Image (tube, rainbow, N blue to C red):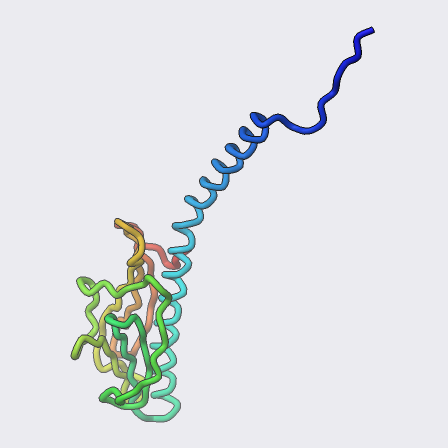
Length: 171
């Protein structure tokens, strides 16, 4: 009688539909991962700055000598060092790529384009202020964070800002 012919494999149309669905799913995943990666980069930068400030304060206490923190926004880097003024070649450490200081909201003292803060020989901050960071790669992003030295005792705090909303941690 009639023999039924079986085909092995998939037709071109079936393969194209499968590839199209996979491309749509991959595109959706990439779009949702972008903000999380920017947030993680900002969190990392904020943590580095906060730890550097705390380390400068601890060194001042440990050595009973002034220690300073400096942030160079033009080159996206920071350093801590003994004493003041800043040495000719401090040990600069990079801030993650794309993270920038928000000059309009940063209130740390600035000298020659470098934000700085000094802790005296007892670990007290000689000034108070805020270093506000933002994601410079995100067009129209409202993702920002702040590292604050809130009083002369040198209390260092971190908080993240998402538009008008304030979060304790950048998550």
